[in-house]
Structure formats: structure tokens, C-alpha cells
Amino acid sequence: MRIVNLLRSKEEKAVTGRRKAGAPPGTMIYTGEQETESIHVHLTQYHGNFIEAQTTENVLPEPRTEQATLWYDIRGLHNVGLIEQVGRQFGMHSLALEDVVDVHQRPKMEIMEDGVLIVIKAFAFDRPNRQLSIEQVSIYLTEGKVLTFQEDVGDLFRSVRKRLETASGRIRSRGADYLAYALVDNVVDKYFTVIDQIEDELDQLEEEIMGEPEMGTKSKIHDLRLALLTLRKSISPLRELTGQFADTETPLITADTQVYVRDLRDHVIQITDLVETYRDVTNGLYDLYVSEISFRMNSVMQTLTIVSTIFIPLSFLVGVYGMNWDHMPELHTRYGYFILWGVMLALIAGMLTWFRSRKWI
Image (cartoon, rainbow, N blue to C red; front, side, top):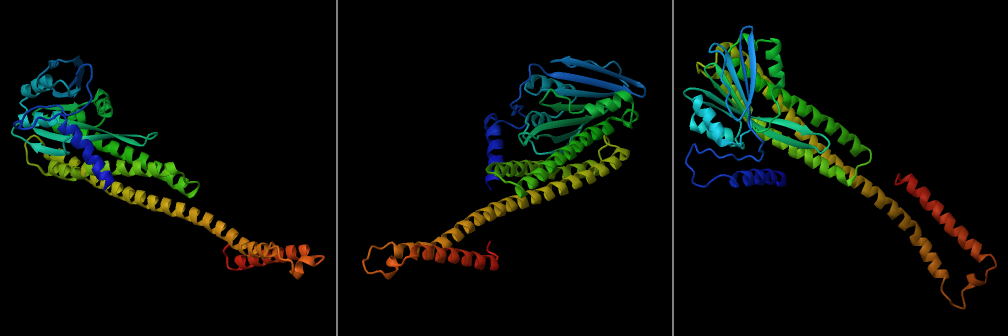
């Protein structure tokens, strides 16, 4: 519950800190924290063998031809005025624009009169710090055009752009709906990379727990549990999203593209199963860590108990013959000191033999 409350408090703090109470639906308020120096707009237009790319800052580039499929990749959301200008130019609904700049949206797909909005989360895993970074990506599909919106200036779709430039694959020969599918598929494929990295961390943690667990091991397990919980929270809605993507009857998405989306839905189901599996593995590692620490503590306590048990009768003998009475016959025995040592050593040997026969040591 502490992890759940931590996630909830972070999101609520981020959202309530920027949202205006009582604002009407469609009000554009940027709820993120990243603010780039300028908004970068990358326009890629392609048609058959023709492809051309343009990059501008804070302005929308003009297409060179009306026949090509247009892909506007917009990086940076803090300039709400420019985002609104872009949206109005391509007929985006005010509710769609509100979702684009509200970076705490649940992954979803909205079918509107003139377009389709897809909101999805992109992840990256920082292995040294075991931190999961999240970025919301909004994809708007309309007739012959695709608009993508993201906070960071980094290129999330480098592989898709490379496929377009080298004319490899089906993107160049298909329409805007297939490009939208390829962008979603690109984000989903990176989930496998994140999960593989988490799996490697879990393997290292298991070796560490079975070897020499430390107090820092507990925090590592906690970090991975939090990362997997965040993944699960964002991936679970993708099953509904890809199902809607594959079965929708909007004319903007063709039946040929929906065949590929169904395969994407299978990938999402596979990722969901992997996340659930690794959550169970993480819980098992925590139980193993607690058991290993308890076992080591019990071993220490067992050793101390055995030592104490051996010295109890020895302390009794030493206490008896340490009394200063005048009429103690043993005190006047010539070899009494050596006899007492022999008795004590024999007692120690006998107790150790008995402990070993009971497999306590």
C-alpha cells in the first residue's frame, strides 16, 4: 500500500499543482515539468519514392506537396499557444488538445469526428539508479496526416524515421493509418527492452541475496517493485486501446492496417503477462531476502546459544570452587587444580559431541 500511495501522491501533486479548479472542458493547461528552450517541429512527407524532411523551431513548416502523407513530430508541450495553433490548423477537437498537454492521461484511444487520438506512455529504465522514466506520447491521426506530441526533444521514433528514409518495410507504400500503427508499435517494442533490463536486475539481485545480502538489497527490491507497478499501471489500459484500434470502424483506419494491430495486441498481452510474472518474482525475492536475513540471524543466535550453554556449567564449577570456605576438602588436594581443568575440558568435549550428534553444529 505504501508504494501505491507513493505513486498516487506524485501524480496528484503534479496534476493539482497546475490544474485550475472549475476550468471548463477543453481548457489547455500544461501539467508537465519539462520546458525546452524552443518547440521543435519535424515534418516528414513521403509518397512512393518521394520523401522529404524539414525541421523548424516554434513554427509549423509548410508541406511541399499535397499528395504526400504528412507526419508532424512536435517535441515540447510547454508552449500551449503553439500547440493550440497546430491543433486548430488540423481540426483537432478541444478535448483532444486538452489531453495532449495534460501529460498525466491514462493510455487510451479516442475516436472523434475528423480524427483519432491515441495516448500512450513511453518508458526508459535507468539501470544504475533503478529508476523508470515516463513520457506521454500523443498520436493524432487524420486524413493523410499524423501528428505526434511529446515533452522531450529526444527522438523516440528514430527507428521509424530510419525505415522511412531507407524505404524498408511497408510504411512508404501505405497510408497515414499504418504510420500511426508503426509509431505505437515502436513504443510498445521498447517495453520489451525495459522488461529485459528489469529481468537482468532481478537476476543480479537473486545472486546477491543468495550470496551476501546487504541492507541496500532491500531498497533495490523496493525500486524494482515500484518500477513494475508503474509499468503495470500504464500497460494494462493498452489491451483496451489495441483492441479498440483493431476493431474500430472509422474510415481513417483500413482493414489491412487492423490486421497488423491485432498482432500488436498479442504483443501487449505478452508484455502484460511478463510484468505480472516479474512482479511475482520480485515479491518472491523479497520473501527470499527476509528468509535469508532471518536464517543468518538464527545462525548467529544459535552460535551464541551454544557458547552460552557450554559456559553455564563451567561458570557453575568456577563459582563453587571460588568460594572462600575454610573446610572445603578439594582446596587442599595436591592436584585439585589440574583435576578441575580436566573435568571442565571433558565437559566441553562431551557437550560438543552431543551437540554434533543432534546436528546443532
